[in-house]
Image 1 (tube, rainbow, N blue to C red):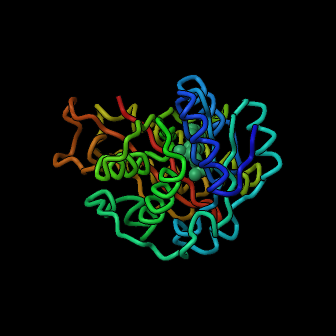
Image 2 (image 1 turned 180 degrees about the vertical axis):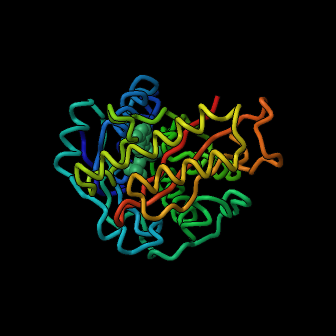
Image 3 (image 1 turned 45 degrees about the horizontal axis):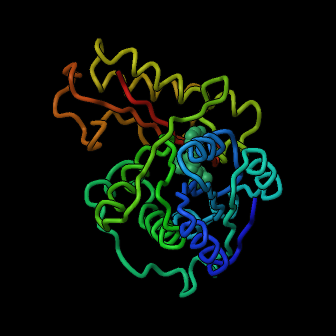
Length: 284
Ligand code: AMP
């Protein structure tokens, strides 16, 4: 695996790969890699000639500065894991490479309704930061495909929206959420949980399963209340949302019960200690 820290050197190399007719698959990450990230690398490798992963903890997408400071950094282990997966390139830039003109956003991304609900509502500015960094990375890497995880459901929608609005010539591929045996969605933030907290955190996955099972018998309100209770009993002291919404638009359904047809997704964001976890499940 070749590690590039500088944009110019990376671009020269990629130009050369492209001239040789190679396709490029891209996996953007913030590091502290786990099996979820690695599944994206594996799938990118199956579909492209050259696989490039990036590790950059993007300061502009953290609405809470403490969350940024505490974000886990495990670079040498990350490099080892990417080498084991036979990733071809790691792009490991510093802040000044990604933002040569400073951190202030040069533009506003019009994300419409998507930015007003769920993560958009609870993390003001977050999706602007996500678009800012991914747009810049796409500009640098110019991949044929970008691989994202369903774990960040709304982020996938936002980035699809951005890529379509800016008419960027690439394909977005979404890979399923990789979970621990317990069902807990893998996340870099899990590293900040104690073993006991990791066990408590499984309640998010169990609540999503409860919602899925109860969809045809209970009202949305009942399902949400039950899920909130379960989360609270398991040690989630703050719950940002338990949402059951349209899978394609994130709109709340107008009726109280599922009509048996509307494609739905359940999404949860909640805190254990000062660690905020998110997860989702497409309902069927
Ligand atoms: P992050 O490093 O958290 O910014 O994540 C980088 C990419 O990995 C994003 O596209 C995430 O959606 C994806 N990802 C994170 N956790 C998982 C997981 N458990 N399963 C699959 N993909 C994931």
